[in-house]
Every structure is written in structure tokens, then in C-alpha cells.
Length: 254
Image (tube, rainbow, N blue to C red):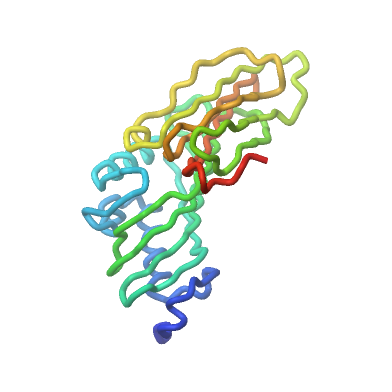
């Protein structure tokens, strides 16, 4: 194993997976291995019992949410990359990571379901356990059928509290005479939302997609913005986290 970083090196954020200390890289590999092997108790051992999550999740709620998620897919692959890290003090790391999750559900379904998620998070790790974690961005796409709609999604990453924003899900191919059903949904990010699936009310769409104007809540609380589109070739569900920031700090809509 290499020597530990110096005090000067440790105080500065580091970029790229290759610069991470061996113990941090091994810790991330342990997390991925536990998730890929569905060893829930091993995974949860990497979290302190009283850890703090930006969504308000407790350790027990996280356990239930992960178990529910795993039950939806018989094939799942987790891959985590360290984007940056720093060591503010000995034995403590602050990291930003990007995790990609690929999944398929083939058992007991008339049509296989595929999942692709990208999750960017920040965590403080003390003595190889997470004591604080925040989700910075989150994007998920679920498809089923032989030819699900292919789309372009337009949604800002962040807005100010109380600000309007545009959410467009545009189908790439012309509709022609084909019927397109769809719906959009705004949900506040909270612990209960991690445990319950989204409920959509479908409507017939006369245009090539969904074009919605939303309004962020008056308080700085993130939202999940989701859409579902169904055509004769299949179904697509997209969901993206919208960061809602205090009025004085978020970027304006383009």
C-alpha cells in the first residue's frame, strides 16, 4: 500500500478515481460488491446508525427502500466512481461519487423491464462509515417493450424556491397516426417518497411529447420530476431530481 497523503495534499479536493487513497478506493469497492451481491446487512454496515441524510432518511428507512428496490429487478449492476475527495482530518474523508445502476426485470413479467440510473452524491466518511450523505443529482430511466419511445428530456438541474420552470419530454420520432399516452408528476423528495412508487394519471397526447410548466415549492426542498410515455411499441418512465435552492442562490432558468 502507498503512503498516506500529506497534510497539504489531504486538505485539497482531489479529482479522478486514480488519485484516491487505497483505503478509500477499497471502501468504495466494498460498497459496490455488497450491492451487486445483494448483501444488505453488509451494505448497511458502511453507515453509522445515526447517520444524517439530506432527504431525511433514517438507516431503517434506507434499508426498507433498498430492499423494495431490489425486489423489482432480478438483475442489477452497481458501478461507483470517485469524482473528488478530501481529508479534512485524519480518519475522515469527504467524497463526491457518481454511481450508475443498470437493471433488468425478466422474471414473472410479460415484457422485460430495463433500468438505468445515475446518482451523484456527497458523503462524509469517518472510520470507514458514512456519517453524512447528500444526493446532489439523480436521473432514472425505465423502459419496457420492444420499441419504447426515444426522447429528449429538458429540465433545469436547479431552480430557486417559488420559481417557474419548464419540463419537456420530446419524442424523437414523428407520431404519425400512432397513439401516445403520457403524464407528468411532481413529488416532494422525502423519506416516504423513497418507499412508494409514483402514481400517474394517463392522458392522450396530441403533440409529440409532454410540455409542462411547473413551479418549485416556496421552501428549499428538492422535488422528483417524472414522466411516463406509452406507445404501441413500449413504455418509458423518466425521473429526475430538481434541486430547489433558496431564492438568493440558485441559477436562473435558461
